[in-house]
Length: 347
Image (cartoon, rainbow, N blue to C red):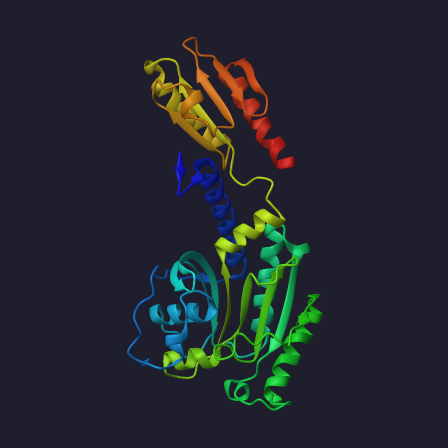
């Protein structure tokens, strides 16, 4: 069976990898104390405080600037006190090559004017690369765009004292934190959206950044209709998943799967109870009870273990790694699977 021309097992494995990535995103956000906000899949129409011809109209529905817009459409920040927000949302947009759908991870921080927040965002993503096994392949580039007013000036030395001090303090923090960085003075793609600091994370020799971020006070202020300090970042999760498969496939992309089946329908209760016992003992594993007479060879192709409860109460065991293992009692089978789980953790 295929889905959109892709074999079903590849589709399932890709989805498992996306869940694995999203779980690590959530773990990092939890450790940094950021709060999740739920955003609509499709963006709403222009709010009342925005009129035609503003920066709003130029935003495509993915990337940090549009993420700021979506957050402000769903949430009004307080006038004081730092707010740290993150989100995962599906986005659909029409580009030069037609419609495209992806999943975006974004972080937005309000009411934090100091460059320390940009440094925190860099460290947050550095921890994510470590969690994904990509730390050795990640490269950070930074630039100083200045204010919107300064961006409109083409003369050399256009950056004012405030912009230069802000960026100098940001880079000093990176140095103090042991974070390597490269100045990319040619990175001006964020003009009109970002102000002051911008940064871009790239993996290995990939020319296009996988995570872009920076400060966008002036855009947020225009969208909200009052002064507002804002900074953040955005990651295309679909693209990150593709790069992860290319550079550093995780050793375990999905939890092990055990499929249980009984020879007799009268053993259905025993099957369900044993499945409950295994779920309690094998935390994180998938335990599936097959309550039908279908042959396991055709109904459990993705199983790592297939266990058949015989009429005499013993189990016939098949392992993807070892093939037919033989017969075991219930207690011996539980111990054997627990040992397999412990061996997998040690690896």
